[in-house]
Image 1 (tube, rainbow, N blue to C red):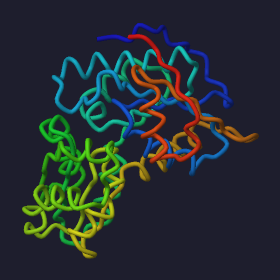
Image 2: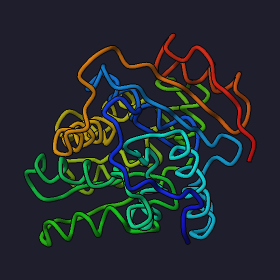
Image 3: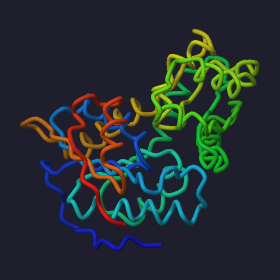
Image 4: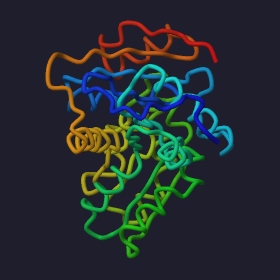
Length: 276
């Protein structure tokens, strides 16, 4: 598979925006951390809300959607692409890197590095969508860096609709967290990777159930640090002005704005719908 966009070999301008795409709304947690870490950078966010979620789609479908999203961002003139979706990162990150002439950052490696730094007993849990967990991407990345680590994985598909309904710490959220995470709690893990960009909004309920001894790794925070490091290494950072975010969706802008404000507040003023 190849990108339709013909990538320019010219070095992007420092003033060019950072592109971020996700299957829907969850990637706003990543965008939020990028905006906090790099307030001078403008951003373009694409949420593929018409085809969300990706977590139940086939590998071929996720690849095609990911390449279409990257094409859109490249056409918009971004200087770096952030794959703010764990499912897309697990399946499409390497092919995207091979086809793009600008840097591409995913959300798995940053979280893996932080989890390995945080763990004391080398027992790490990973929660994510069905596709992310089935891909084994987190397990491979963890084992590659430390073959001695024990990895305990659990797919938690209902977490996404909970977040999008705003049910973050009510009885339904707590009951669902208990149902999904009970076995992980008993496994003795001391570190838990939140392997879906929606899940940080459930931190309070997850931390309440898992207890204070389990370190929660928010991939969004670590991804923002990685983006900052890449821009510094490539001398691509914007040095003047204040960044401006732009939002594009493939369906239902009004719902995106409503739910998006749970992530970013009033910064989500509007969203432009694009056709697929």
